Image (cartoon, rainbow, N blue to C red):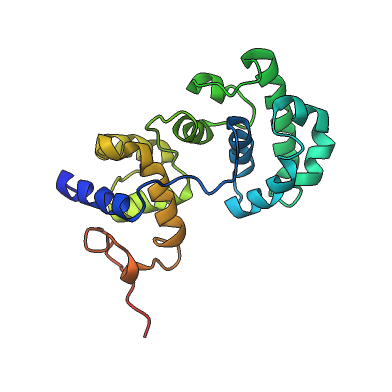
Length: 213
């Protein structure tokens, strides 16, 4: 895909949604960190349903520790892998207090040192909390990037590096959100909505779906 096409794709995304953001509901950096940890192998909708009662009680590391692992489990038990996530969140809260003065760190290595935080989660925090032009490659972005032709890679890391190389600098800050939303609502896994896609004429996907009769 040439640079002119790449630029046009993101220009269209920008015109359609100038200020994209995460669909996770949060009110501070700590809440977003917890929400992203919970969102692994879970939908944003399921996370929001759990955190609507959790965050009013525990929106700081100290309050989360006071709630405790057992109390936390009661709030997140509808989310997949909730027991392991609760364990990681409590351990993360302890480290935030002990090593980072209860603040979410603004550094990749420090973020990835927290239990339950990998590269993808760190990228979300760096992008959404701190405005860095990172791209967290989840299943949606991995699928969309390969399908459209934005990046060709067999691993999330490979796709991430190609996207950072290929996407024009002016669009990198918001590219993460545009691609997730596009994959979630338009370029879906089983039956992409090609007839209504705003970049269908620029996409390299060969098996585009046709309008329903």
